Image (cartoon, rainbow, N blue to C red; front, side, top):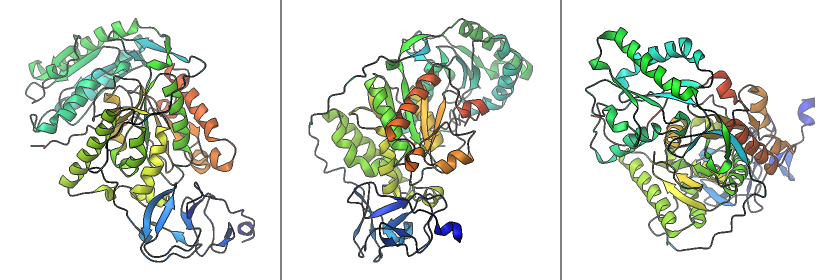
Length: 509
């Protein structure tokens, strides 16, 4: 009790018009504590909201200067506001949005030219890793490929010191699907673009079964001649393994000749994502990532933010940032497509957030979305990508993907992402074999608990030890160092890599 009496209550109100504040104290605050001359009427966990005034039944609850819900019953000043006390607002209307041109702020380039050490590819792109990719055309061959890659990495890869890794791009597509359905274009496009990933250096080994609906020839990148092996044409398991090894060796010999050269930061394609989010995500990690995103765009790079359901309720804040009427319309179209997709599945946006998000203080998808879009920074939105579409332009892009960490990561990889910056408050061991993932924690407790998993701690913003700008600069520097392979992420260190997970909105037969 003595320690509790000496706790200095620390709550954060983001905008002056907010009628809630978030408890920042580790371990939360106890009933009876005083916050802004308000007596707490409940024990409130860290990251959760308290009412800063009396809120009448039906009155708006405001955070980030936006309505995150309506009080289902009267809420007294000092009460803990949780998910069960709020009515979800209607989603921002899309049909009545008036498309109109608007002047965007001028983008001032950075005073200094930033560079990294990367690999030039035959197609004009640039890689930050030198990886041999093995892509199956169908999931049926995964067992053989897993055995083959385990052997290759143990017995063959050490002979090629300038090759970083051998990665099998296993997936669940290729057969047993409606291959000619309208939306089958999404997983097929994703696989075709994964085959062109810049960290593969133009080398690729394709392995098919022989009777699948999606033959390996449909995945061949234009202008390339990849190695192709069809298992049904081989005489048994031993020959399969031998031919895969021979083809891999030919690829490795070509990759081994590659060397890093100095490249401008404008060659980078960076993905932004959050997972295991909490109430601090929109106050610390995501704004700091947004600051780094602005620096990258000003350096001429390509930056992608995603996760449809986690921006849908903030679309009214994003549309005015569209660089053109066309971009604005594309944003609306992608949101409408996903609304229809959810409706067909008998779901709606309230299926997000996850239980862990709610435990971390996020009451509903509106609150989550308002924090999520902070990752996008402040630059104009230069373009919109459909799921799995390759990024071919510079600037800030909206890449429409599901919010699922693994699916979003796979889709961003297909769009050409070199590296991903990933914020988390609850913690996740997620990682990608094809691209480094920089983990940014939203609060000190997670960094202290996961010291050997978190790369950058944005929790210092809450404690006042660093500003959003300080952490944003740190993330920007980490990106350049990681791109040059001068700084290793913890996920790379421990080789924590998730399987690829394609987005397939088409029927499975």
